[in-house]
Amino acid sequence: MNRNRWLTLVSPLLLLALWELAVWAGWLNPVFYPPPSEVLVTFWEQLVSGELLAHIGISLLRIGAGLLLGGVPAIVLGLLMGINPVVRALMQPLAVAIYPIPKIALLPLVIVVLGLGEASKIATIAISVFFLVVLNVVASVQQVEPRHFEVARSFGARSRDLFWTVALPASIPGIMNSIKLGVGFALTLIVGVEFVGANEGIGWFIWRAYELYAIDRMLAGLIAVALVGWAITALLDELERLLLPWQASGTHTTKRRTEPMLATLTTWFIASRPWSYTAAVIPVALGTIVAAYQGAFDVWIFLLTVVGSVLLQAGTNFANDYYDFIKGTDNAASLGTGGIVFKHNIRPIQALFASLICFGIGSVIGLYLVWVAGPLILWIGIASVLIGFFYTAGPFALAYVGLGEIAVFIFMGPVIVMGSYYVQMKELSWPIVLISLPIGFLVAAILHANNLRDLDNDRKMGKRTLATVLGRAGANIEYYVLIGGTYLSLMIVVLLGIAPWLTLITIITIPTAFRLMKIVANNSEPHALQPVLRQTASLHAQFGMLFVVGWAAAWLLEALI
Image (tube, rainbow, N blue to C red; front, side):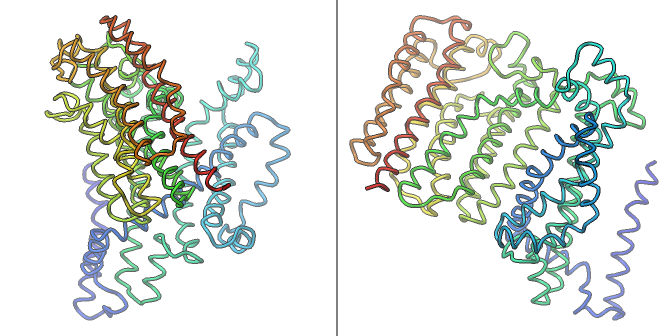
């Protein structure tokens, strides 16, 4: 087996060596066939400059959007066709007839309908993926043993139940294969699509190099496509291995089959703590609405910023669960929404892998925003990923040395608000920092409420937070300061004329704030303080949405006047 692995490296290395030798010996013209050494140098230069990464990021975003728009409906329809003969009889002839048509041939028609913009490129990918995935999913469902459906029906399962309890779980291997085929097909197609009517993307990069007769750049682009395809395939293979451990083969088959089946996708979604996403969405919405109030708004950029921010939040959540488990802070007795290793039967390495996936996809979106807005977003993105990962990772994790609230205040408040504002306006100003302070205070209060609840357990486990440093009385005062700072900073920005007076609608949340401070003052038991965490997060969401609504109302009022 080891010998075979080495042999797989011999053929490509031998080909590159022969190519290099042929150019050096004069058998090949270096103008038409630049040596591999020159191509690799060009590839590295383009990579380091960031240009190649930006084009790759743009193409991946188009592929991702096309996969979602085409793949998700295709999976649902394929499952319905598999379990329902009527739906299959109606739809399968159309799918079979359209599937063989070269999808690149549909591009002119799509351009006629949608124009040369992003919509035509994404639609071409979506159409191509749709028919490929539909037919593969139908075939997967039809391969399921009929007795599984019969057993389900004997227990009273309806069509909807058959969909969720039999067709979908049994078809997951086929669905994963369909996704892998769809990704490979989409990557191939996007290069051709970007040859026409594009001014960015890896396909445009390759075509532009061809027009300039920069063969080394053209080959560097092809290498990039190959590496991206390999990386995506490896990632999907790993994801399939994690989702379907019983499918593993080889020497580790027996071991894998003894492992418990992983949680469903729904469980993974719950494990990512989706209720915490408001902490990522609210600051993006605030920065964007302030930019819109000042005359700059791009809905596409806004949506990408929201998705990127949520992915960074999810990545941070998974990383925190992994390292809190490794360090012993999370255990079976822990309260709260974290601790997925204990609560959702998810292995630690899977939590870490999920974290890296979220950070990776979020970083791809970030590269596109860098391309759109400039290098400042690159530094904001790098810092945000590092803070999110090292919040609990490493020997000097921020959450373990008393810097958690400070980091959250800065990066979940001003940094996200400023970054969201900057990608719209392409500039920054000091008022946006002041505008972000109320959100920063509240998101820090969420974390501090968590630390208040866990104060005794954190001391026992040696975790150093501001709550453990200040003690119970001092920690209570910190909570009051954070809540009070929210409303005080709001009043200041309104009185200074930075925020419109309509944002004062947020003061209707003050009774909730007083009620939470009263609970903190009168309780010290973890179970009694547990509601404070959830309700502080709810206060953040309510205050943030009202703050955004106030800005939006002022924006519309000015537009009408």
